[in-house]
Amino acid sequence: MLSKEDQRRFEQITRYLRESDPAFFARLDQRARANRGRYLVLLTIVLWASLPAMTVLAGRVAGAICAVVLLANSALLWRYRRRWL
Image 1 (cartoon, rainbow, N blue to C red):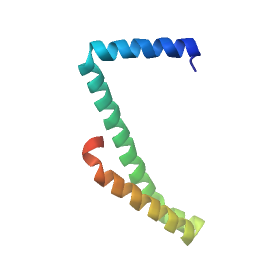
Image 2 (image 1 turned 135 degrees about the vertical axis):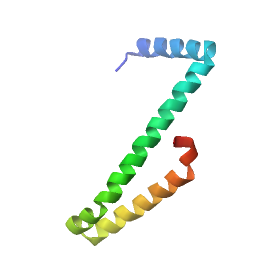
Image 3 (image 1 turned 30 degrees about the horizontal axis):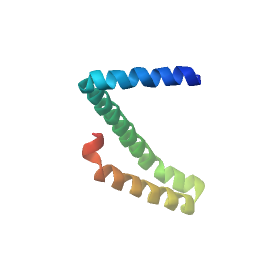
């Protein structure tokens, strides 16, 4: 955790670097977005694989809720696939 002064200084440095080298920040942003998307896809696959076990262990209602959440997650992944991958 940064102090208020350190946070302010960090934001100044970041702002200066963003203004002086916008191509560098664009590459960093694209790489971070791609990593986020990969982790989200991996998490979705793991959750889909665990759905049958969750249904057996936690009951049908928990399995149904998990399935609905995963369907929504999969729909979002499909909708924004070009942005993340």
